[in-house]
Length: 486
Ligand code: NAD
Image 1: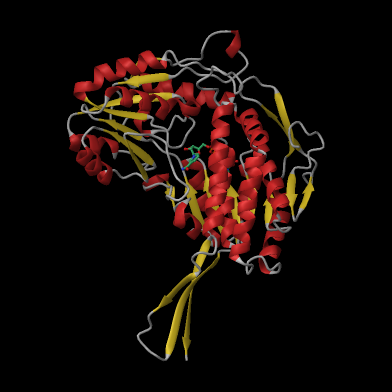
Image 2: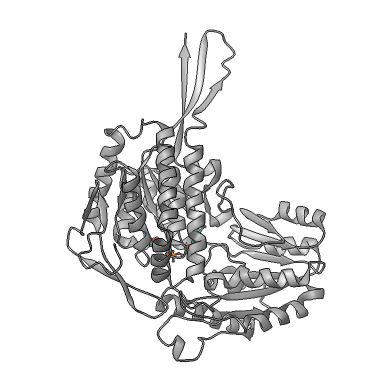
């Protein structure tokens, strides 16, 4: 298994597990305590090019792209069964790579299996449609076909979940692919590829090339033999990838960052609003694209709500993935910890009021991990750095609003548009506000749930296209119109 495997033949190219062409490896250290948890192959340009050639051959010549969608669906259901069978091994590897609490990784594993099951079940249920030609002498249909060779680039915060959202629909559609997961968290991608092989994925259909974005990711983005690049990660990387993909006019699907407003009206149930405000931002130390990083709260309830959130935030227990009493964990790296701390300092320098946190926790227990205290920044100004930029850490900013129109205006005042929430006891107001929010997901009196059968994605600069749901399959398909003169 890939954990601390010094042979490091962890690239899957054309059905073979191989080391990097130039023999490079990378060591993965747990963010919670710095322990070495895996040694994996570090692929480069040559490996990416070989994998693209293999995926191209498998698509053009191997019969996969014209295989039965029902059989591909069965394969996905077998993968889901393997994920359930090996859940403990996957969850442990995910927690060691990310520092995430084991219970969260276990929870994610259920969602990942559900994603494979969903796409397994819908594969083949919708092959296209008949189109009315208006003439008895012609027939016309639109049929859905695989898009071709897909490059997939994914982040470190939900390493396997983000991979599953791409790999499962690509297999359902009949595409071939090259996966490049984050270089920081590769272990579960290796395990997943083993599961795909065990489930019967033919050689060359699914390829794994570990390595950095600047080497492997850029080859996938630029290469003329890649038909679609599907990326999840930060806005700036998304822009770079779009630009690299433009000369070959490949399809581009982007799931980018968010600066997600959590709108709390004065008539909301107080305890519910506090509970969800805390999990919205402090789950996985705020390293969640849809984290409720902006609390937008009605004037009347502002002081009481912020005071209670601060009181509870100071009680949150921080610890490593296997600490049973931990409620949140470390940040992914020392560089990211520095970025979050810089963000907080910048926010305070422009006038935000630091109510709690803003530094690393003290004590021997935290000395070797990348920990940061749950942080609350109050009275942040609209349009300021603190409400515009993603910290991607455990940092909650607070803005006030007066009435419903003001709440909607503030919540939409961002170039991002991934997710948002509304807390109120008035169902009609909840619906009105939800309809006016320019965000891809809106929760009412809840935060974070999503469903494999419901589309996920961003308005505005949070992305292009959708994952999950029917549209998530559609990203991996082309529509072809066939017209016949009888
Ligand atoms: P990142 O953009 O730094 O890296 C993501 C991936 O892109 C990695 O695999 C990386 O190696 C690769 N990459 C980096 N530079 C590249 C380049 N020049 N060319 C090609 N590939 C390149 O993001 P991250 O730090 O791994 O993840 C955090 C970001 O991801 C946050 O902004 C978060 O909001 C976003 N995210 C979005 C969603 C969503 O569903 N919208 C989900 C999870 C994370």
